[in-house]
Amino acid sequence: MQRSLIAGNWKMNGSKKNLSDLAEQLFNLKCDADVVIFPPSVYICDAVEAFSGASIAVGAQDVSENSRGAYTGEISSEMLIDVGCEYCIVGHSERRSLFGEDNHKIAGKFYQASKVGLTPILCLGETLNQREKDETLDVITAQLNAVVEYTGKFFPSDLVVAYEPVWAIGSGKSANTDQIQIVHKYIRCKLREKGLSAKILYGGSVTPENTKELLKESDIDGLLVGGASLDAKSFVQICKLA
Ligand code: PGA
Image (cartoon, rainbow, N blue to C red; front, side):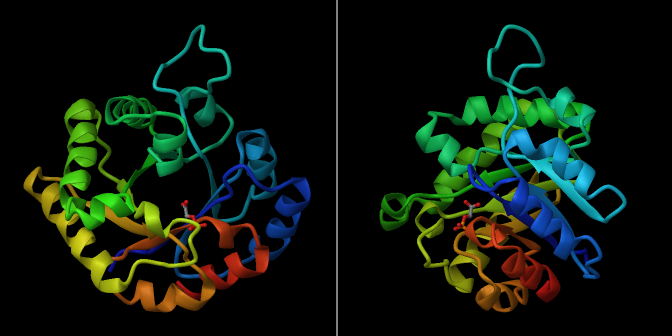
């Protein structure tokens, strides 16, 4: 069985104080999962330093779809590697809905990350409206295909996908394990058809209370944690349960 991956996405939250609290509790953590935290970009260097020598990786919440140049405000995949990042999140639903990122743009970001050896976590997920119209698997297919086709030979062998139903994010209402298993099995099958395999994480209102139930499912290979990753105690608890 592969090791689970527990990822903590701070979004636009947190501070240096949060980081030192987390480092204190997480630094010597013994757990059976791989752990990565995604602080806002201004804290990435501090996080890399805080976890230097520990088995906790650091990632970025976003990356540019361009490699360099006149793109004020953007951060390239090479820069992320340069400062010690190992992962980056690509296509989070907040980037899709609030910043107008479409499948093509997300594919460009995924490509840039893969090209330099950064592990992208590709987020996929349907809105409530799409679920109610029974479009979930079609949405997932379109989101996944856009990236696979664009990335071509740079497709990473250590692919990580996060299924995050938009209606479950920050709502306090996680998807149930049957709903998640259907989508995860589907993603696995679609990738297998293309000769690919992936770690498939679930994200959306993950807490220490539902971690065990989620991770006991055969197709849930890890968790992408938002709100609960901001509280050092909760995040450590989730990691220990994995
Ligand atoms: P949440 O966020 O755990 O606060 O629901 C998950 C995410 O957006 O990755």
